Image 1 (cartoon, one colour):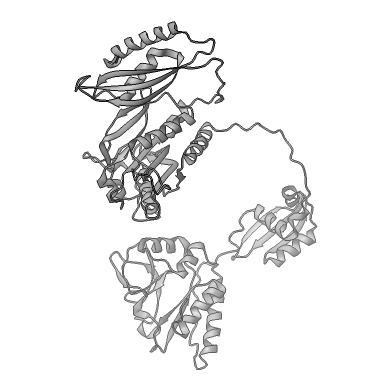
Image 2 (cartoon, one colour):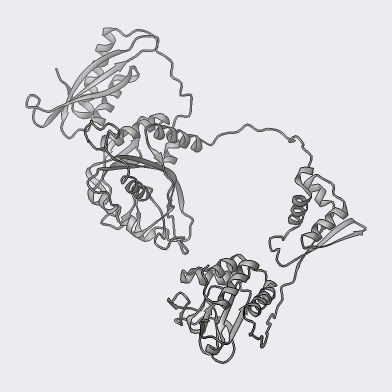
Length: 569
């Protein structure tokens, strides 16, 4: 706290010493030779000591003279009555203001001070007289020629000390230790309480009068705690717990999220924890032409949940997507690293109705950007792309036992057209991923770097995951590999071809790997050739050539039916 003058310095010193804020007015600047406490007027103007013009309203508590507001009660004084080097007459004020009123004024004006920080948490009303007495003592000490002209004390409704009564043996029942009445009486008296121990027909009762400065003591258990902490918890005897132990049943969602963290961190991603609120600017990057904002679960902007009292006025909305906040994290880290990858497991808040609580959906957000090879200076500077992100997602889903999954082309605001896809399990969409549009990345300060993002519904993953044993037994018979080239139309997605291969081959097919794509006049300009390596395994016997011929025939028929494809000779 900086030094200003002897009067203000004394008030600040007493605030630090006693915890009682005080304020000094230049008495000669007061109108009407008096001050009152009242509500502010709507539109009333006042300049505070930080030289900012404040507009007041009827919810704010102010100190005023006969004509105008001269201080924000419990928050800050005004410049009109500020004590200066020319001040010769001082009005010293020491008061106790309601904590809710002080907090409301401070919040509405976005103005915090040492005084408001104390009043918001509650100040003992009896400190007002002690604080001003100490301030007068110091002022007379540093200003020998000063004189106290008048003291006014207005306390129309003094706070009455709280009185608690309880059976004396309650202390023993709660702590498990028997203390004597003399020990309890001495302990509470030393702490400033006024104990009274009396015997009646029902037994021994303990009545305690609580001083006003101990507002934290409000129930009998608080008294027991005071006795225990002073006389010593070390006197509580050690005992074994009594009761039955119940097996712990892990929450499936918790187990799945733990596994997701393991898979993603092993792939090089770092977990981030971001704010649950978002801003208009962040929302605008993922809004379509219809005014719908979001990625996995878009919502109309006007229906998003807006907080009445946000911690940050610039971020008033509860988020309905994790990606914007993760993009801020990625943008900050790209200044120091060539490659970054961050994920977050958290809830998003989806509105249900004007008077209903939101639907809280556990969601996984993942953002990647930068070079594919971070540490090798001689490697090419190829950037992470759609397929790198797709591989991480597929590894994550395999790791948590979700599948089989397939990918379909999709569109989403903020994403690059043609490089966005939806993730489906059966007919249910569980996620969306892709490369962000360059303009979206630039909005977060990421220029010239490809950014990939994904969002998955964790609650849907829990319902789809296989929570059985994940152990894999070694096959008794050697697997058989075959390479097939499938000719399909250019617009046919590889995922559809893979689904047809799996459907035709049946349970003998254990692995499908796409290793080559070919375009040429030999197969027609409207077609492409996809080369797959298929791995077949039978748990009960070795596969024969006849088995593979039959499977190949089924595959040919399924390809023709589902994707109008044919095997290339």
